[in-house]
Length: 80
Image (cartoon, rainbow, N blue to C red; front, top):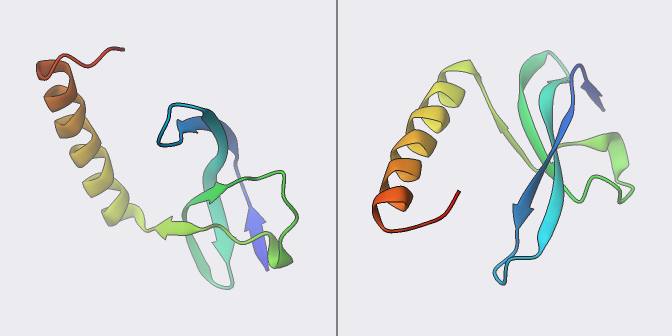
């Protein structure tokens, strides 16, 4: 069973640009407390488990990588 301690909704686009909701936040699963991402948060799911989790160290890596990819996207002419 997952216990979501915080939640926010973000929108990630599918391959053709349609926005899709995702739930993100801090989630406790058994004795682990991690950052979780859950696609299609409106669909019922056993235990309310996230699709992906990352610990604090991993979250720092994700943030660094996203910043690098943001710079690359801007350089390639992507839009905000």
